[in-house]
Amino acid sequence: MTIASLIDTPSELTDAASNKTAIVLMTRIRLARNIAGRSFPGWAKPAQREEILAVCRDAVAATSPMKRSLNITVGELSELEKQILVERHLISRELSGAKSGAGVIISKDQAFSVMVNEEDHLRIQVLRSGFQLKKAWNAINELDSALEEHLDYAFTPTLGYLTACPTNLGTAMRASAMMHLPALVISNQMEKVVRAVNQLGMVVRGLFGEGSDASGSIFQISNQTTLGESEAEIIKRLHSVLQSIIEHELNAREKLLEADAAKLFDKIGRAFGILQNSHVLSSGEAMNLLSLIRLGIDLSVFPDASRCVIDRLLIEAQPGHLQHAQKGEFEPGQRDLLRATRLRSEFANFVRPDFTFSTHGKN
Amino acid sequence: MANPLKCDLCAKPATVHLTQIVNNKVHKVDLCESCAQAKGVTDPSGFSLADLLLKASLNPEPSLAGVRCEQCGFTQNDFKKHGRFGCPACYEAFKTLVEPMLDNMHKGTTHTGKIPQCALARKSLYDRLTKLELDLTEAIKSERYEDAARARDEISQVKQSVPSNPKPAR
Ligand SMILES: [Zn+2]
Ligand SMILES: [Zn+2]
Image (cartoon, rainbow over all chains, first blue to last red; front, side, top):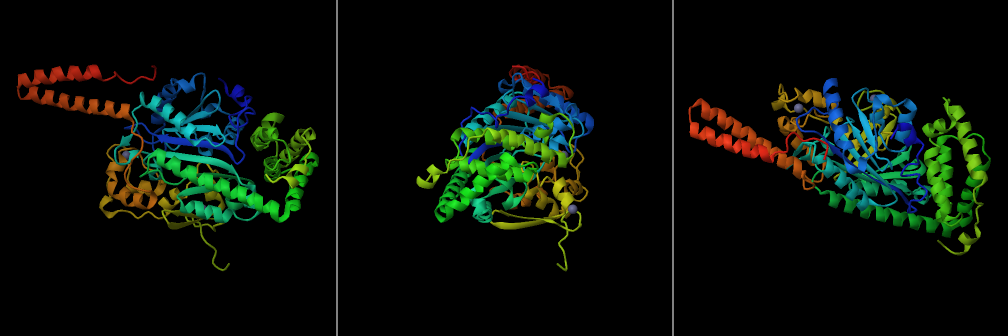
């Protein structure tokens, strides 16, 4: 598979057919692995990096989920291609900035990606749309075991998988969910949630922007620690934390509707109006507007089928994707014009909001 | 403010302030704009506050002054500088530096998760092979020919069960 055909194929996350849950947009698990007896990428000499890259690329390409995958070095990717892969969560910013001796293998369906010579020799990742921690774990566990048949992983019984950074020792697993939490943001409860979740050993980060006022109200929640607990225990704990965040978000939505439904619907209606008519839209503003439409879908203001359109736009309104669609280089200011044009045309044919059902029946 | 906070990494004025709680301990980090960017604070997939804390608060271990990892040449100053180790063997070389860190950083200090069965089985065979080869050389040197023959037989046995040079193809 080539990078061009990969970019023109919808990603796992923009797949219209997939069955998404309303609040958890995406589940992601990554495992860090290193080859025994070799320097970690940050300390390895260029020739050693090249050697590791070659060995790992071959081993990864031979596994069954990676049949007909994209197998490419970072040096072969243009800046724009890198940006698009970052926006799709298929590579990290760190990898996209790697000078030489780094690469990535991405499965045909873009569900798996394996970065080579990022911070560790291997960063294996699986993405699943919706709330699917167990399925994601089963998938990545299988890929990891297949790789381990051919690669000698650095491992000790006490410290587990050895990683360049001690914060990743043990399972070397980071499991996360991307959550849409607009009601918690609107009712100023995010800070409280972040604190509570931190106390449970989980980390909350804004996906677009920082902290509790992340644009788009999209947050990533993941485990903080990796040593001293099995993968299953970490996943179970994360699962219950996510479950309780979902409950809090649903409660917050109900409270907003009870307290002042008109105010909430006004926000959603205005967002729709701006998306249909604006001519200049920054990335942050676009994310916030799309987030409100997505909330409207959950509240039955728009039909359920529109949710995948919004999820696709959340990715396609990002700078790299916009630039790719328009072919050419653009200044940030021009990008805001492009973004508005793009969203205007998407929303010209969007189903009109219907507030009647929502004002009577509650959720 | 009269006394603005300084960046924990480079001492420029800090504009990004982060708080995280790890194992019920509050950790605070203040960063300047450029360090926040460089550390991927704005990249949700790559950022961990624990990483930053690790570097900002590391105390050198006097007993390890001058110690180098035999495998890769790493020193504890390199660790202080990069916040990362040089190779897997560094964990053994700098054990006394790592162990106290783990307590603050993780839920426990012992791995209880997945074990790479194939890799470990291969490793124990390799280790066995290395030992037998050593036995063989010793036996030949001291003219213990019966022992040498036995070692040679065992070596060929072990070699048969070792998958010759693990290749990616199935
Ligand atoms: Zn700084
Ligand atoms: Zn080392």
